[in-house]
Image 1 (cartoon, rainbow, N blue to C red):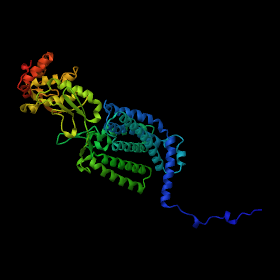
Image 2 (image 1 turned 120 degrees about the vertical axis):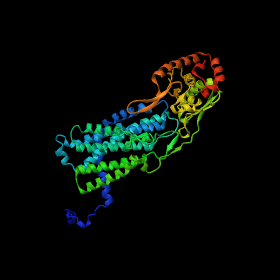
Image 3 (image 1 turned 90 degrees about the horizontal axis):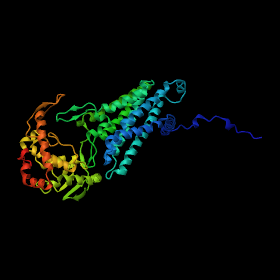
Length: 496
């Protein structure tokens, strides 16, 4: 018969028990939290919201950010701006998850669960953030896919996209706070509305500065305001576009909201200390966004070197940025049609370049404001005819110039609507201008409306007469009168 050793049943001495080290305890806590988070992600059914996030998140920015020419900067901004749709949905999900403790037959079940209430709130925040980020990632994949398939130059702005991702987490944390403060069946709707208004509200109010510009002093407190102060471009790279400050402010705001949740759960000294510290940190990070003069670095841009894509036709060479190569053929047609009738005359360039924001304005010969559009040549046509010095104060020029300029613009698009006096070419100097009240306290200088209507009929008649001439007659008259026309020495009656 086998006899068990007495030591088998003996208790292990307390001195022989090995206590886990502090790092091991931390790792065990993290591992336990991640396991619970994984269970929360699977059971909260947030996956039902992901298709909605992707669908609406793609549709809303696409209205303004999917032109014929797809550019990486446009797609990066579209991805960023999708957060104002994805974020509120994540906030609603977070509020719904937090509110479940109030539901019928849940109180006794929740009270028997291990872990603190703060941990359950963090699980709700984590699950809502994960599903929100999944929706945001789907939007990013769609826009980046459009750029990969259709963009011909450049790459994604990861900083902008990452800022939008942090904003989704911020909105989820706001949803947890609302769900904890207003525990009722309407808390998800309240979180949805509050976070949506938080985004658009930062863009509603504007202050006028001494230099005449307007800026909303709080617009940068939401990433939605980033494109307002520095829109990304294929022509230059922003060395400092407030992205770093907005990102740090968003992270500090996450910490502040977590501290608020801790205080709502247990008003302990540790929770109040965390709230005080995060509030101070959030205030510090918000200062350079409210007052750009206190920004942490100068806002500057560095031109991006590129080799233009060019094409010759009709005696003109037209060049565009390689990102706009798909618009080159149409732009060439606009250039040759518009400037063909005056080719070779004084002040008419033979090489036309797409306007480069880092190289000056488009209001000079040889520069195209907008490629692929007849309206993009309006400034180029106007630059051929110098504004008379005595009338430049009120943007006035002789009506004879305005008629010929209008005729030139119509050459590339015969169906283009007429450009009335007071349009892009200024006002006719034959009509007196006066100070007028445009309402809302806005004063301005413009022509007398009654006189302008009467004189517009004369300009339209002159345009019809000139357009009715043959190409040979038009060219002969332009060659004979070009110098006087550009100098502003011809009256409307002197047009053929």
